[in-house]
Image 1 (cartoon, helix red, strand yellow):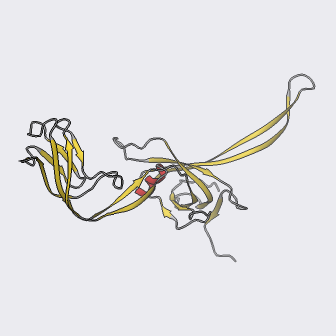
Image 2 (spheres, one colour):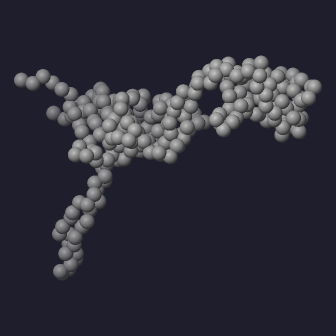
Image 3 (tube, one colour):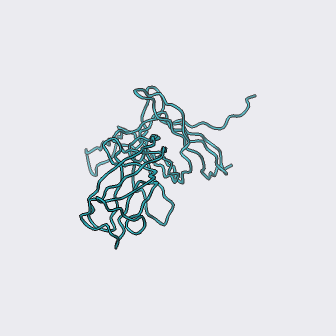
Length: 255
């Protein structure tokens, strides 16, 4: 009886614990529209040249590589960090009071990020009690400037009283907040990968790859009319005496 299969399933990935090849906890990738494995072989052929046309009389396999590709549309920060070779963490920001910064206005319509420092390269969030002045002049919210309180951004209104060259002093407080932040890096991420099969048609085989290196490929469409997705390439490696790939059928009761 033919085993026609319609592939569906879940991808789970466990990064190796620091300094080891021991996988930690497995994390579900979320919805992935495509997962493929590929095999390529490098051969050394030998040809006899004793008479007439050369004829292949030997072929030796030198190398077999296993690779993979994942397309995922679950843009969870833990997934996105893989695309950027990065790391993610929760930024816990304490409340700030009586803060001031001065910006020299370049041009009306431009925006300024508040709170950028070496320790806070993306600035502060959750502004409150914002007052913008120059000397004894207090500018008007809405008429002269706008505040994006959540992002910590001040925008100079076109046609307002804040003109080019204005030494704009911004006084503000912030409320305590938390946010996820992903930072790009350059260290490739390695771990173990599970594919848990949930085929609606065909036998279900779970795949286990004891050691893979994950690398980004393709584009991350930040503006698009399609669902945002990202792609990852997998380099499947040999780990100790393990096989590169294991396939497990679904268990059944023995006799």
